[in-house]
Image 1 (cartoon, rainbow, N blue to C red):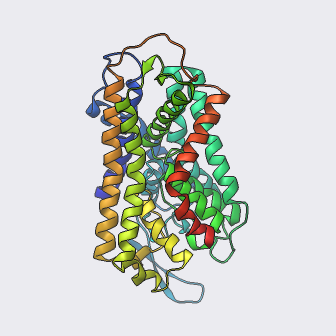
Image 2: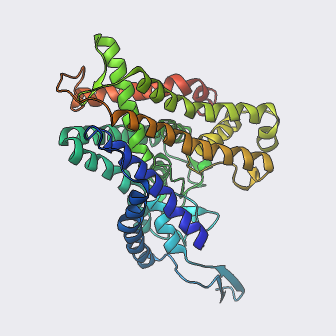
Image 3: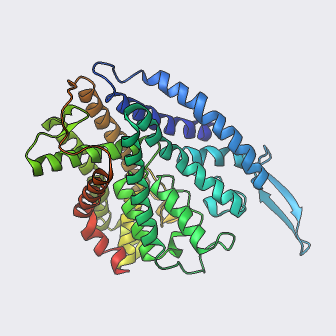
Length: 407
C-alpha cells in the first residue's frame, strides 16, 4: 500500500507540473518553464496531500473503511462464519480519484460497496475526479485573461455535456448496474471517470449501451474534455494551436496566439502529438487480431462487440485510463507487455512533445497584432469544438462504425 499510494501521488504531480510549465510559456519572453522539482514538490505538499487527507476523512464518514487490519471474521445472519477483506481503503480511494489513478483496492473497483458505499460517496468521488481538471481553466484565466479561461472552460463543459447526452440517450440494462446508484448515476460516474482518464468505473462496461461506450471511447480519443490532471489542459491547448493553424489557412494569415507567431515546427509537433495517440491504439489492435491473441479472449468469430472490446483495451491503455472489458482474461504475457508498453508510451511521448512546444513559445517575440481569430468568445469556442471533433472523427470514425456503432 505504501508503494502503490506513493505512485498515485507521483503520477498526477507530473502531469500538473507539466501543465504549469506549458502555461508559463505564454506569459512573457525568456521567463522559462520553471523548475520541475519545485513544481513537483509544491503540487504534492500544497495540493494533493491536504486534499487527499481531508477526502479520506470524508469518505470514512460515508462508510468507506480505513484500517490496518487485512480482514475481519464475522458471523452472518445465516449463522455461518465469513471473512471480509478490509484495509486502508479510504486513504487509497481519495488519491485514486483525486489523482485520476483509478486502481481500486478491490477487484470490483468503485462498484464495490466498501469503495463506494452510498450515493453520497458516489457524488463526492465524481467531484474528486474532475475538480483538478476544471481548476486549470481558472488558473489559465488568472494568467492569460478571464475571457480566454472562460472560453477554455466552456469548450471542456460543452464537449463533455454533448458526449454525456449522447451516452444517456438510451439507458443501460439494469442487470449489470449497481442498484445503489441506478442507471443515470452509473453512466454519469463512468463518463466522468473515463473522460478524466481515471478509469474507476462503478458499473460494468458490459452493462453500458453502445451509445455510452461510444461516448467513453470518443472522450479517450480526444483526451481534453476534460482529460487527465494537467495533461488534459495541455491537450486542449494543442487543439487550440491546430485550430489557429486551420483558421490561418482559411483567412490567408500566419497563425498567431497572444501576439506570438505559430511556426511550421510548432504545428508539426502539435500534429504529431495528435497522431501519436491513434497510432498507439490502432497498430496494437491490429497486431492483437493478426496474432490471434484477441481471438483467444473474444472467440474465433470476430463480432462488433469483440472488436470493440479489443479496441477499448488499447484505447484505455493509450489514454492512461485503466478501465477495460477483459479484466483477468487478459492476464497473459502478450496483453500485459503490450498494454504496459502502450501505457508508458502514451504517457511520456506526448508530455515530451508538449514541453518541446512550450520551449518554443517561451522564446518567441510578443507583438500587439490582430489575431486571425480572437482566442476567446463564442466564435472561438465553436471553431475549436468543430476542429477537435472533426480531427477525432477523421482518425477514428471508421473504427467506431465497425465496432460500437454496429453492436
